[in-house]
Picture 1 (cartoon, rainbow, N blue to C red):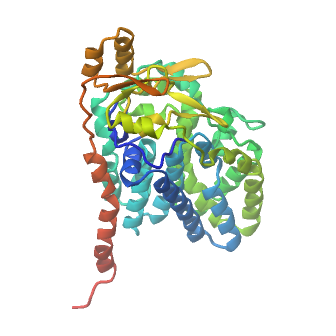
Picture 2 (picture 1 turned 90 degrees about the vertical axis):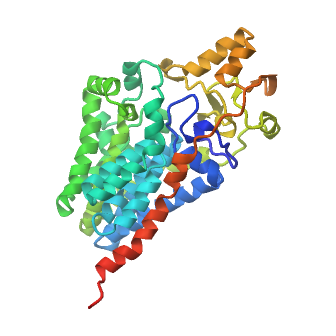
Picture 3 (picture 1 turned 180 degrees about the vertical axis):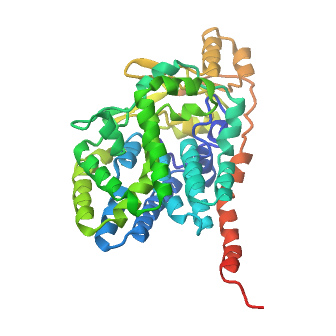
Length: 439
């Protein structure tokens, strides 16, 4: 993951720029409030909230330990953190909070939905969870939290690429002794084998025990899990249906990594383990602990390190749109690859090209290709027309144009950031309704 202490207030951070608004409102929020420290606070708070929710749901100390272990350190969360998708991990932690808040604690559900909506997928799944477990107005209100990425998505074309190749590249991966179905059942099976945590059989044991306790918890949690696990299984078995959906339904590209659907089963797993007697929950705790044996070593790659961003170069760019013709969209870091940190540090024309196992699933953005053609033709007027202010080669500014600094579309993210204030403002009204005064 690429987390900077001082990210740029760039158009791409707020849903503009060269690429679809996949990182809104996350990047805009971090740019406004101060960067990496805010992400760390959100990660810690979401994980702690998931643990507290599991404890509230549990019937005994033993079941609380099991539910907390699975709620906080499940394969989905670990794999997404290793993939660099920290805000999706935050959303996964918060889905049980939304489901627990239900119809009685709407302001808690709203706060959890707000934090979950840092990423488009998290926001979408938070709304689905609220629609099934909370009051309908909470779910409708949650849809407003999706505006920072939904509105730019209406006016921004999808990334060009081969849909069928993308679906195949991001399809769930089979794991040892359990296959693809078992991998999805344990909330794993991420397409990137380097982000897998292994010991899948232990995760399946946890999942089976949790499903055995499903009859002890509200049916709505089973409905939510059926949507998640059933959807992931269906798109794995019938990938053509996902290809068709992406080609014909706006926003369906969020599900091309269809394994993400399994996070909808997490509220059921947490609640079910909390409702079971001590013996099965103890077995689930042991299995959950065993599957985490390799995790500390794997998570070591997430330790903070120097991003390699030249602060002097950032100052020289001075808010203008930069074009890096010789810099890849992804860069090598210890333990794998990461998004180019300059895409967070400055406003830049981003390529967005993505290859998985040698197959190009996302082509370079039209703006990037136009800028590359103009640079190769030494057409500075065309670069200025595209909006490029500086061209950076070998870590230094090689050319400048007269293009003005870009306007930053911050309004939707600022509106989104007011979400917690709305939740807190509702507390006194809820308290008055629950404790009426006598006349």
